[in-house]
Image 1: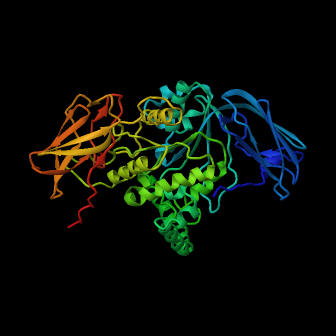
Image 2 (image 1 turned 30 degrees about the vertical axis):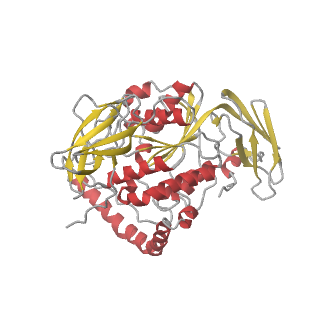
Amino acid sequence: MMRMRWAWLTALLAVSAGSATVVPNPLFSDHAVLQRGKPIPVWGHAAPKEAVTVTLAGQTASTTACSCEEGCWMVRLPALPAGGPYELTISGSNTIKVQDVLIGEVWLASGQSNMAMTLSGCFEAEKHIAASTDGQLRLLTVPRKSAIEPLEQADLKWAASDPTTTPSFSAVAYWFGAKLRRDLGVPVGLINTSYGGTPAEAWTDYGTLFLDPKLRPLTANFEKTLMDWPARIKQFNDVALPKWKDDVAAAKAAGKPAPRQPGQPMGPTHQSRPAGLFNGMVAPLLPYAVAGAIWYQGEANASRAAEYKTLFPTMIRNWREEFGQGDFPFLFVQLAPYMKIVDQPQESGWAELREAQLHTLRNVPNTGMAVITDVGEEADIHPKKKLPVGERLALAALRLQYGWKNEWLGPLYRGIRIEGSAIRVEFEHARSGLRTDGQPLTGFTIAGADRVWHKATAQIVGREVCVSSPAVREPVAVRYGWADFPVVNLWNKAGLPATPFRTDNWPRPKAP
């Protein structure tokens, strides 16, 4: 399914005053970071059949542009160690010199608003922005765009990390990259391609969705929606939008807050349409050499957790196939606590989505998960403490990609043993032991065969947790953190929180 995508870079040609014919893809611009230890693809356009030579760090590769009007070309330079800065030279009938190029680690950062959330909007932003100067940490943000077909390029520009560039950059990605910089001591390039409020199907290739029987309803429903779109967009433009403008004027006159602008109806280029963001924000990056990807998304799919168990692994496989670099590490964030804290056991769509994410961790090779049960906010879907999120993703990268022996995940449910009126829960990632935050252990519930859940007493016993309740004499199942906003405090001694889980697979009780 790997595809080559080319476009005629007319704007760049115009800049060259009409004399230049060789033009690189905008990914290859001043201050770029190229992936170390892998062959480096470099591509662009030239005159049809024009000879093109690319030189970097003493390595040279040559090719001939294709005979098509676009004159597309690609070379692959041999793998190089970390280093730089270098000059990347691309020559044909003209010569282009790309300055200040580094060789290091390149990571994609993607997802919805919690990945898009900028450093300027986070906890203690001013302090961190002031300390963000690092000439070997480079940043690139892909413009937000949904497209009908895969785009062949985007308006891209690399920049070094400093107080003028980091305020508008993804906070999670920044802190992920900053930790890798400290721990690896090599250049790091971060490509932020994220868009708030968007579901995973928007980030997945259309053909991939269509060919999976479990996911085909996503494309079928979208195609039905398109049939009604002309009438709905007309109603939006002729009725809904003018009414909103009138309401804004009335609110302003009354000294009241302006109402939120209504969203456009689903259509051909809506940001949530299947494949729209894959086409507009992932395809233009292919096949840039990368170390891996980090991902923070799931809120927009929280009402469809069962589907997400198929959709999310499918999206990961799709990205890996399209980049053509094997099963690179794909590291993601489990959803943070959100919404009103409920004291009694509850069913929860958000808990089910976290379970779907855990399912991906257990079943998709070379994946890692950051658990953030300690940073949620009841009234804000965008928790402001993003530093631990980025750094926990970096812990996973250090272990899975770079072979460090560090602990990278909190206690992970392994199994249970029923002992009379109690259940003992066994955990992985607990070799160093278990701990709480100094308070009694919270967040466990227990049920018998009647499937009625009760708050439980839980105690740490070595590397296990013993769970019981006087209301359940013959327990059969345990849950931990099973809530929209789990109030939990089980950690391992490496300082990482346990992931919520359940030992049952019972369907939700039907509403009365």
